[in-house]
Amino acid sequence: MTDFFNGVEKLQFDPQSTGLAFRHYNPDEIVMGKRMEDHLRFAVAYWHSFAWPGGDPFGGQTFERPWFGDTIELAKLKADVAFELFDLLGVPYFCWHDADIRPEGKTFAESRHNFEVMVDYLLEKMDSSATRLLWGTANLFSHRRFMSGAATNPDPEIFAWSAATVKLCLDATHKMGGQNYVLWGGREGYETLLNTDLKRERQQAGRFLQMVVDYKHKIGFTGSILVEPKPQEPSKHQYDYDVATVYGFLKEFGLETEVKMNIEQGHAILAGHSFEHELALAASMGILGSIDMNRNDYQSGWDTDQFPNNVPEVALAYYEVLRAGGFETGGTNFDAKLRRQSLDPVDLVAGHAGAMDVCARGLKAAAAMLEDGQLESLRNERYAGWDSEKGQALMQSDLASIAASVESDGINPEPTSGRQEVLENLVNRFV
Ligand code: XUL
Ligand code: CO
Image (cartoon, rainbow, N blue to C red; front, top):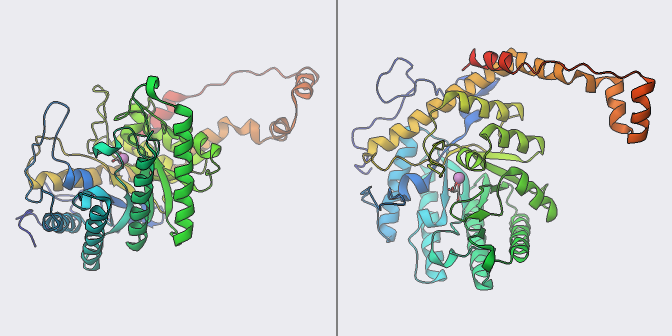
């Protein structure tokens, strides 16, 4: 045991508690026939909680963590503290980038060696912990070598370096029993079209993803490959803008049945969508994989990655997840940073605990709305015409026959109310 979380006790479910406890997250509570823990499948993000130093565009590190530094010894201390947090929270999963868990080496071989040592160390930690790996991913955006992209770089050597890195990370994710492998294209985009061959870059990205999928099958990794859309930041314009854009990309490269989405709340907001829009769209295309749960500030216009605390928003998100049948390999990863003034170890515990409670409330509200059934029955009622014989026939018809039938059948539609206020009032009974 380290002394980092000194004095913090393992969190319990205690609805009456006024201290550090779960007031809503009760892992064993049955919601729609399934344990709450198995619905939500929470994961702690190694990077924000243990690797992020607390910087913003105007200032650097505010956190002073005893594991900051580039040695294996410190990486092991970081892992020890990480597993202490996982145990305090009782989270079933965690997620990493290679760069979060290992010190950077001077060469590829040195970084690979450091990574392999740390993967074995994490496997040892997992032996005495209940926490498993939700997903692994490669950080192909922080180091200066990736400043012009990874797979989409104008320099083929960076493409090669990135491919070798993803191979390593997939091998490690497989070895650790990870449930998914995520690709977020932080710098897969451009700063200015004046120096960018957009067509070539998109082809490189498509070929890269095909190689990842081929390798997944080659090693027998049965988890899901997930792409995480984001419209911009750090790149001015990213190729994986949003769910719809990524779906078009997958279709173009024949990958739409191989790759699903990891959808982040903050990225959806940056793209000008709501989180539930992105979730519903992915579900409708059969590519909803997992979620990165956080919230963005609606005024700042950048990716603030805050812990979620808006129950009605979260409820609408889980409503879409439940309607889609729930997570299979996916889960709820807290891709969320503490505020940079939240210096104390206990802030890390409180940030996650509060977020887990918000998600639990959201999930329960979403389940209650589904079980109540009114929202779904009003929606079905709205489309009932399409279930009729005439409605079905329209979908098999053609423009000329339809045109003829409008007059012969005396079609003369009357608009009906969309009842938005009624539906919003209905939702407010549950949140
Ligand atoms: C960045 C982001 C990443 C990905 C993993 O905005 O969301 O943390 O989730 O690379
Ligand atoms: Co994310």
